Image 1 (cartoon, helix red, strand yellow):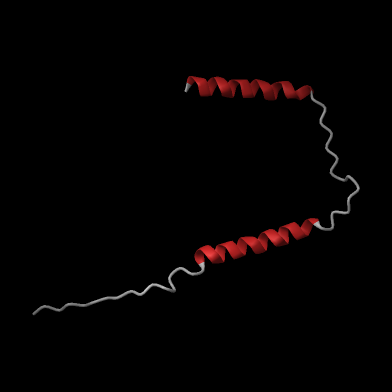
Image 2: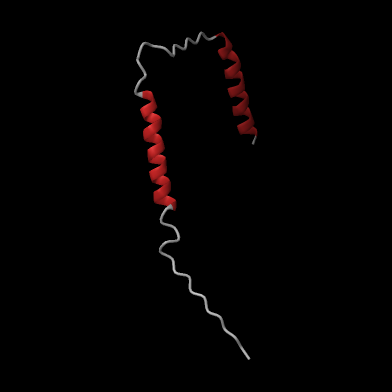
Length: 72
């Protein structure tokens, strides 16, 4: 546990030193980005297919048999 806490302490100091770093994020780099929504569409279709594959066939191939025994 002490080793884990020491490692987390090093990570905290490393984040503190990054304040002086110059980070330049340029989101608009000139590309059209028209194909970007296709990634969401393909991802959603794949998610639905995986969910149907995992959950869709459940319960359709099971047979439940119940017997009622009445004693006098």
